[in-house]
Image (cartoon, rainbow over all chains, first blue to last red; front, side, top):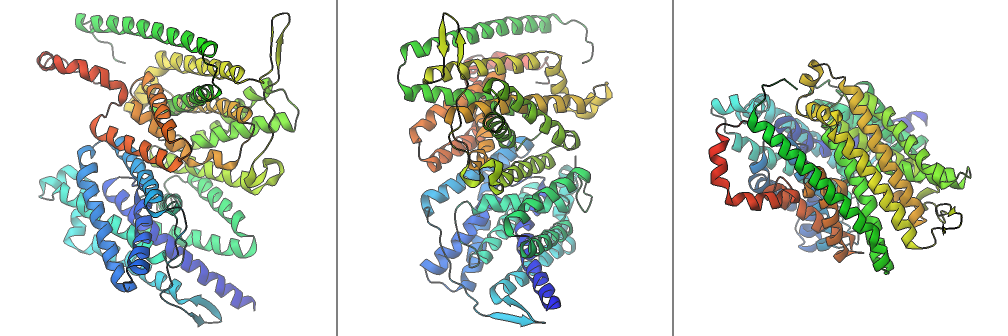
Length: 288
Length: 350
């Protein structure tokens, strides 16, 4: 009995951690490569979730057809935003943060106007549960965990093993030198926004059947992802992964033994105290 | 802060700046006198309420901008306003203090929290500070929500008493039964805050904060203890903002955790950027213009936020100096050719 309970809580922790890792992934990529704290990440995530609603529930498309359509569509919105809004002020870091803040809340309030105030449900794609070692996990959460981990691995290999990824890392080190080596800064930034917004949309599309959709879900997600990437070390992908699972474990155990609302307060306090003691995060990323 | 040979052109510019400053001081004085006369003509409760709301938002926004100007990306203004409101309400309702004692005490409590949070975190630049202050604000909100005793839980605290009456024997009694009384209190608070922050910005502090913002290593190298100055600015601004929060609580008679969500900070950021953060008057202009424009959508907060954030995006892209730079820009268009000639020789860092 004790062991089963422990396994169940650990499984929950993994499923929560995978969702948070997926949420934080796009944000940490944009921060790591371009040094942009992209607040509108939350809005992109919200748009992704609503894309699932409109494509699946309204148009009746298959979920697996809707998934790539939504991701590509929102990735392209990201590219348009980069070209139209962010490129003119790329060198002004303060202005970029404010622009991203403005965009996030602009899209959120647009969401209220367009999508309405009533929460929207998306029908589950996978029904039923999987059992192992006496623990239960619903299939849809298992799929989120699987795709989330795949996305993390794919991004990691893209950055580390491909020429494009090398170019992006070179850009992160020093944009000017990268430009001199023939790596176009404009291309890198567009690509970064394509991937970053696409990942946000992927997270939104994947959690749409699990969560209830409201336009404010984006701002809440940004705060969670900020805590995750802050705890992990800003811009570090392995750090984000580790800290997502740490937060997942705290949340899962806390919810089981203490109650949900007290757990969230504990997570806030834990992250703040951790950052005060070790401001560079788990992975010790130093940024000026 | 290097010593340069006196340059007649620069000296002329400096004197010109002094004169401009005196002039703008006169304008402000005139404006305040005018504002003091408003309740004599204006009897409508609604307009008075709009003006009062504007006054305490000007306080929030100027203190927010001041922290921004020290180079810190502050994202927790709502935390300190909330501390001020809750502290003063609890002091008045539970401990039985007078409002006039509780308001400054609330400011001091918020300043204490600012030092507590600021000392370890202000050495972190940029995003870390934003994450921690945002997290701090949401932690506090969580605490207000969670503990019904003494914070009132998610419903908040009702029936907050107004400020205690003041009697000047033989003259008048101010018992805060009318909006006019609150109007004068808010106006006085705003003037005091603006004066304190103006003095800080114009004095040596202002130069030091500029130096910290532009290059904190250099500032440290010339012997400025940047931590102390940053903590000082953070504490003073948070304390002043908290006093405005205390006024807000006793003015509206009702506070709830929802009043102190991150949206408050977002609004302040938008006011600051739209008005223009370079100049002191910019944030005031931004607050006044946006709050007046926002009255059109009063009650429809989504449309209001939509308009504000749309404004922010447009200003960032097309008018980086904010609304305050607009008159200067318009007059300069005519004499741009002249300026280009002079630019070759001048090398202003600004």
